[in-house]
Amino acid sequence: MREQQLQDILRHMPAGVATLQGEALRFGFVNEAMQAVLGAPVQEGQAVADHPGTIPADLLDVMQQVFRSGRPYVAKAYGIPLPATDDQNPTPRYFDIALEPVREGDGPVSGLLLFAMDVTAQEEARQKAHHLAIETRRLDTRLRVLTETVPQITFTVDADGRYEYVSPQWYYYTGQPPTADLNAIWPLLIHPDDRLRVLYQSDSARAAGIGWSYEYRLRRHDGQYRWLLSRALPELHGPDQAVFWHGALTEVHDQRELAEALRRGEAELRFLADSIPELIWTATAEGFIDYYNEYTAEYSGLTKAELGPTGWINLLDPSEQAGAARRWVHSIATGEPYEGLFRMRRHDGRYRWHIIRARQLADERGPRWFGACTDVDDQHRLREVLQTQYDELARTNRDLDTFVYTASHDLKQPLLNLRGLFDELRRTATFDDPEEGEIVGMLDQALSQLDATLQELAETVEDQRGLSATPETLELRSVADEVLLGLRTQVQESGAIIDLDFAAAPTLTYGRANLRSILHNLFSNALKFADPTRPPHIQVRSGIADTGQPFLAVQDNGLGMKLPSHRAPVFQPFARQHPHIAGAGVGMYLVQRIVASRGGHLEVNSTVGAGTTFTVHWFGA
Image 1 (tube, rainbow, N blue to C red):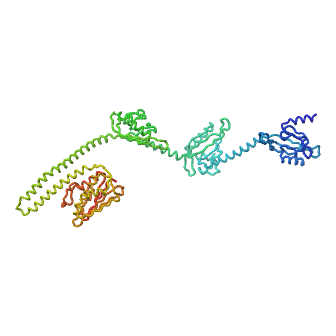
Image 2 (cartoon, helix red, strand yellow; image 1 turned 90 degrees about the horizontal axis):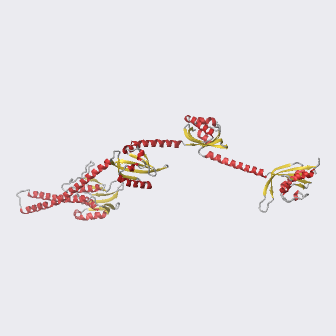
Image 3 (cartoon, rainbow, N blue to C red; image 1 turned 180 degrees about the horizontal axis):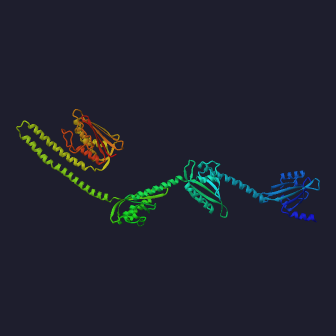
């Protein structure tokens, strides 16, 4: 009766129980839990080795060794895969296996008791914990590598403020040995002016369970105190219970000094702007003014608040405000510089002319506008007066040119009358004077010189009227050939040799009439002032100077001239160095005027008895 009750109890136990009898280890009693472990149905008296279930070979081998040795054995978390079902793969299960030898009295082992306790859940939890520990160690190693390679000092402190960890960068930075007591040394490395503040702020943050962020100076290995930014966040283990603080130190010394320099620079620039007697202002990227210097308020008689974000436009003459605003909006949209001449109202209500300029500056802070309103009222009014005077002088000059031109032509007729009377007198009258021939010759020469002077005056006025000839691209050789064609009689009579070389600069953008006048005067002078002992040799070449501007050189082998040593103009009207040669002395003066009117200058090098070189630099350098 008791044995039956025991079997009933064992049969319904959650742990697998089975009896194995004899050396063949034949199944005796097998409860339901063990049947589930073995998988296939168990027949009483069936040998374990013949059972088709899931008993692995190594477990069967251990069973036989326990039977032979008589020593019990326990296998913890032994894996036995449960049989596969139709829709699932074999599922590994883990059991604590206990093998207990059975003896009758002191006799030999007659069988084994097999116990199997399912510990799958515990084993899976243990394996997960093991994998989690491995992953944690891997992440911890990675984190340590990261914290020890970044250019920052990382640290961990506990709730009492004691350092649990500091990265190697701290030792490199401070020059302290690895054996240094962090908690004792660290506060001593803080600048004395910052130490109390830092200790108080860190203690307060730990007491409140919050993080911190502040800057202080820490002594570097070279003894220099450098600004660092200290930031830390708490690690919470319980509800609002901070246990550790993890943080980093970042050097911000250069940024702090740069910010201080910028602050000082901005203060100095603001002081400078307030000291300038000019309206200075800045505007945002959207075009709204956010700063006026002090002079703006003084000039306008308005406060900065009254001026508002569009103050300078409101100060303009009402008729100019709309146009100025449209141009300002265009500059804001395109980023183009702003510039204009406007009338701006002063505090006394008077409008004065101002040049308003603004430029956009784009940097890391984004685009901003910087502008200035410059009072040019006095200059503007002076320019108007000068323009009026210039117009009057130009009109007077034109009147004088007209007078000279008219006078030179009007004097032609009296001169012709004198010439006719003189010729008639010379033909019909005789003088009882031994110097008659010389006197007649001198009078004839005077009349010829007067005729030439009047002719050259008329030509000079004509040429000066053409100083503003429209520039066009001209072939130098073509114009030179045209001029020489008009001088061919002089060239042939003198037997002159003329060399033209325009290869270096074959063209010139100039007024055609101006260029013809210059070449005519240069060529005719070279022929007129030739040395009577040798044929004239004129060399003409064009080129490009070191300044990048074109030039023309005309060299002759004529009489030459004496040049003044000072820097005064070489040629003055009616000035002549060779009075024995007919001329009015205005040709080279005219050349000099034409060249200067285009921004150029005339360079002269000459040796008396050897020749002269005229170099025309067409435009300013």
